[in-house]
Length: 255
Image 1 (cartoon, rainbow, N blue to C red):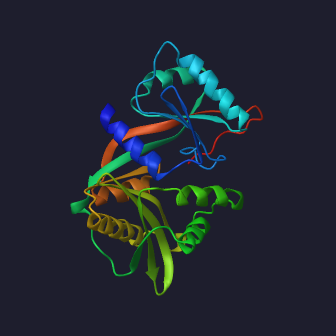
Image 2: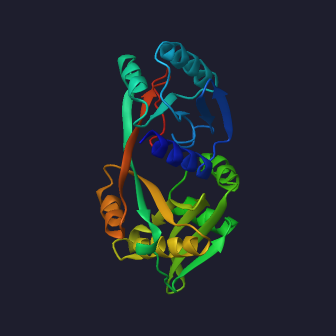
Image 3: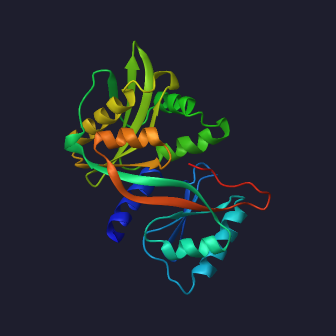
């Protein structure tokens, strides 16, 4: 399991890059002006050393406080010792999530109503930010992060009567295709457009050589969990975030 977690954590960090990264004795501290917990948290790829875990937590708190950010740790199955230590220090559990995986051949298909292109266009970004209701203050950081992806990126838009109603992107690395930023206009949900978008993205990813797929979904998003399960995805492991609020009571983002 440790090697599996490390693989998908590396893939997901590369697919969702932070604006700044600090390496601290095997711990990965990510900073992105507060946009998403994923890009503003402490991550690690192996079990932490027990003797100095408290000292390391304290140092991380100082670094995030210096950036006026809440201290957030991403907890995976290899971080049980850290999770216990954070709980004892009053850190709250937020955003329990599931990393799901699937084999592409059983999912991929192509829909003529969906246009897939290489790279991320300004049009795609503007429409995604609009539908996801990304705050204007966060758009510059979000745009920089998307434009910083160094692996192959495929973006897709689903059109109905000439109107784009769904968007998503796929990041391909090491024969794995990660689905990210899948969103459907609320007026067109539960009509199969999200399903078609995912299938078409994976079809294009397979043409680029991808054989396996993965995605991350919030555990209480039952509609999304059901959709991905119907597509053939199954849970690989669960993860969550531990958050310590800032002195003024503001807690971290829950994405």
